[in-house]
Image 1 (cartoon, rainbow, N blue to C red):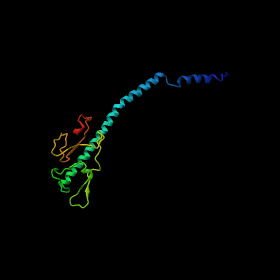
Image 2 (cartoon, one colour):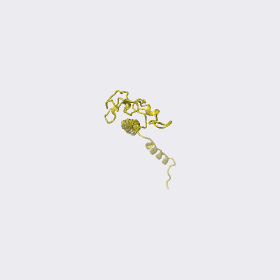
Image 3 (cartoon, rainbow, N blue to C red):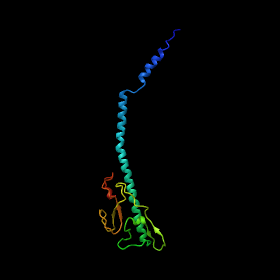
Length: 167
């Protein structure tokens, strides 16, 4: 029986291990290109996702304020709120919906329609464009008589191509 040299096997194993122990430069470049291409494809998607979330928030804020205005109008039409002349039953200011109004025939009872004036997600401010009942539907200045509708003061355009001020 022939015996092997004690260090012949480890030497062969060390050479094989040296060849497969790391990545080549080509493999590293290909991996870097793949990661770069995937990252560059995800940036526009993330940009539109953020804009879409802001638009959804804007719709939600507009809907909540318009519902509060409509509820105020229903209360005034039912005779539960005192109606100021020239307001047609709509609130005179947006802040009235937050401060609350005394109900007719109730002692020390106030009805609040909004907890706070929401922040416009497009402008980052709690300022909104207002339209009164006598204003045109596309008016950009408020007549001042009452608050019939609200709109965003943002000059941007939505993903659907419609300016935010027309939502």
